[in-house]
Length: 415
Image (cartoon, rainbow, N blue to C red; front, side):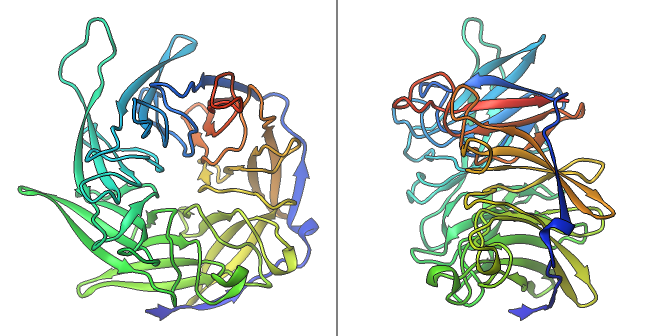
């Protein structure tokens, strides 16, 4: 493992870094689906994927069929409304169980995703869903599932982050654990005439972080980037405060570089979401917690290449202790969007926007969840469409079931 030098641009005063602005009254918040805990699933924890027609696709980690092992669904536009269709209900056996990641489209029109459990080894799967070739006359058609790979403990277990696909059709992802212990892995899954082959690109240990639960992202040079929730060191309650890492490919394999280590006395701690990149190669991410001079305050951060090292900047520091659990999203103008899990006026989370400016990043609150019919405790990222609409999920609330707390919602914010 090689460690890049780090220059940390600490923010002197939060007031100079970020200017808060009130909510934008012109934007409209709508719930477009209330989960019931039945065939449609329950408690969505991840964001959504769109197709070219603007239809939405997502997963729930629970609910679905009789086993309650989760579901994959579609929300299709119809006129001014939306039609919900269950695409697949996990049975909890060899087909997988409990999808904690988004599904992504491949060039063949199939959806690809992971389950944290199930499979022949009961330690998670990578799966593919394909539309059926026939049209159902009376009921919506489900999609056919194929398990591409089942983890068995010798090659990692519990994949929970989003997958990414390269131009050759190879899939890349991360597992929370390496074998049956701590650590975690980054893997590549490649298609071939005899099926799919898994290659471990990196196995984490206590000296370079562990639990890369946010998945990985590519840059234009083919490097992979991600975060680990814990390690190295013994800060943040003894488990370490987490890292931001890079995996660089070469003819001899992949080389890991630690770009930044979160630590006591710095901004943010224990990142759960992954990172995204802009066109200049800057990385952006979030932490749900904080340490040191920020108490327990979460943060949105930027990591910028600087010579042979990287410069860390806190774009926004939240006042609270349950901030963003997911990756950020960026629009064509460079604005960042995300959600907080327990922040906001009612303590049930919020949707926010960060706008870059000459004096720093301007924070705009777009919606505060109440925990009622509008939902609450969002873990998801924000998905944008070509018209500037925002979409996401909230894990509780809505109008239906789940012990009185509501089974969660899919929401839309229109400009």
